[in-house]
Length: 161
Image 1 (spheres, rainbow, N blue to C red):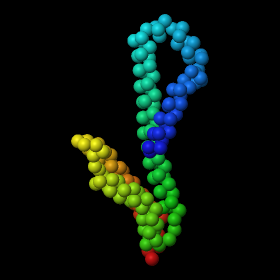
Image 2 (image 1 turned 180 degrees about the horizontal axis):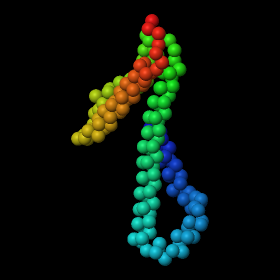
Image 3 (image 1 turned 90 degrees about the horizontal axis):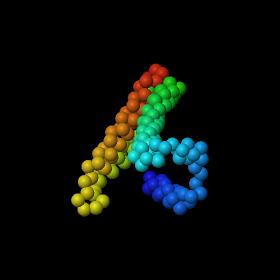
Image 4 (image 1 turned 90 degrees about the vertical axis):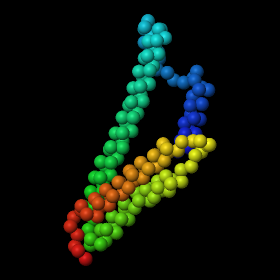
């Protein structure tokens, strides 16, 4: 995560250094500069505020949409794997436990991180970081449970061997 943050900071710094050579849509610049109301600092600031709110809202919408789609696709995949797999019920349980154990491992990592939260500097409130690890554990544990239930119990009826 810090690598992405560092790469983003470097990219922003490069864009600041080369800001005079960045491509800007000239049609947009021309249209905005011709508008009399855009020359008012309050109105142009409000326009910029609205654009920033729109971009932020679109990003949040896309993030939630991606999480929702990932959930639906995961459940459909688990259902397909469960329906396609054949074998004894005992082996089905082994398959389900093996496949869903990824989320169990992630849940254990979340618990370890949650229990070992320490302040990064004196008098830091660690509540939000601990809450994040706790929510991560909850999401991982739910994913493990749903994946296990779908793959172990909701597939084709297996021969009881």
